[in-house]
Amino acid sequence: MSLASVSTVAVSLFILGMFTMLVLNLNKLAENLESQVQINVYIKEDVNREDIKDLEGIIKDMQGVENVTYVDRETAMETFKKRLGDQTSILEALEDTNPLPESLVVELKEPAMVQTAAETLQKYDIVEEAKYGQDVIEHLFDITRLLRIFGFGLMLLLAGATLFIISNTIRLTVFARRKEIAIMKYVGATDWFIRWPFLLEGMVMGLCGGIIADIFLQLGYAEVESKIYNTLAFFPLIPADPFMTYISIGVIITGMFIGAMGSTISLKRFLEV
Amino acid sequence: MIHMKNLKKIYDDTGTIALENINLDVKKGEFVFLVGPSGAGKSTFIKLLLREVVPDEGVLTVNGRDVIRMSKKDVPYLRRGLGVIFQDYRLLPDKTVYENVAFAMQVIEAPRRLIQRNVNNVLEIVGLRDKYKCFPNQLSGGEQQRVAIARAIVNNPTILIADEPTGNLDPETSWEIMDIFLKINAAGTTILMATHDKEIVNVMKKRVIAIEDGHIVRDEMRGRYGYEN
Image 1 (cartoon, helix red, strand yellow):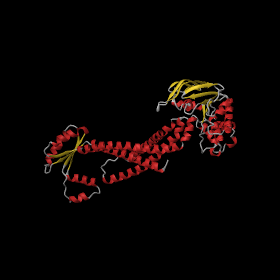
Image 2 (tube, chains in turn blue, yellow):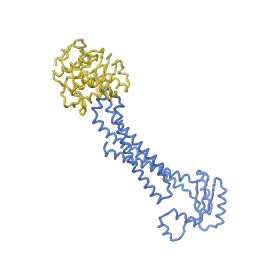
Image 3 (cartoon, rainbow over the protein chains, first blue to last red):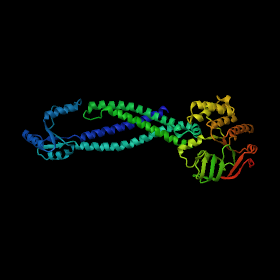
Image 4 (tube, chains in turn blue, yellow):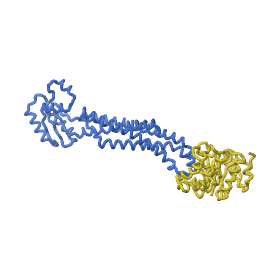
């Protein structure tokens, strides 16, 4: 068991873990967006306040509507400012003008009703646009689907590579001890008696590689978490606790499993006496 | 001890018939020489007993175990009843005499106290008690083969199988080995020895089984070697 093989195993497991985390987070984001039961109804410019009140009343009586809130232009601007956080350059470019429209925020009881409700609302004359982020969600699902396929392929590849590295390393140990193994077979040692030290070696390799990978995954996730918190606060990253615990355990178990498989493979030929 | 009936072995990869129509019974305590030209099937014969190869047809029982129908996980237990010795000794160079012999007991997970007692016993039998701390490369060929014998008998096998055990030894040393074999045989262990050593076979006057081209061509009590060299 050399440093080189352990670190290669660690790198493979690190990438394996990273992709799992990425896919899971994007899934979470997509689900989050999908479960949003909110429609933003943007009102055309220069519409009478009374007309908006009327529409608000109509929407309130619609089936499946939980709540309707009127948002004036100033409030919209406040929310926008909060969301931007430190990125003040956009605000500076606006130079105190407010391009944001008035809107009605419609909350629905069921996410399934979002599409039909939005289509109905779109038909009103004073409505500029009824948006509920469907296009974003669809895009996101496309991306996650792609990532999942790509990530799965990559994971298989990396798992294969890890298997190869571990089984090759063990093969060297097995080869160095082949005479001993042959004698053990002749005097009646059971296959398991011969196998377990090598199995242990493979599993320890997977364990060490997994622990190293986990350390970097933890550090990396903490870093990404703080970065996202500062710049993209609305991005719902899965909280590190207990998510990272599961990932860490998963990476270690995967490493040990691959290690055990690797040594089983390299021993097979030598046990057939 | 050993029962073979219409035994046949064909090697899959080449299709050659290694052994055919082998009928044989070896009783407890017998001393049997297996002779015949190189490539006649002696090695396959030994491999069948150890279940390194599985016969294609016939019946083979060793120590009452059905070797053909035996499952893979029972093979180690078959081998624990058999001691094996090779022409090239096959000792582990980084282990001492004592450790080489004890190794055979450790790997079948024998209790430590038993290991110590048995190893000392068998080293006494082969006359290497005082060399237990030596490494194989500090020993002569004859001594190394004696270590291999000690290792083969330390688990009290009922059958001792020797594949040309004197092939690398000079005549005098060979006789020392045969003396040990006789001692072991006298204690009740069946011995099956494949050999090319004409003098030994002719002098010992034991049962001789001759194999040629995969067939038993001779099976005589108090037999002779029967070949020119």
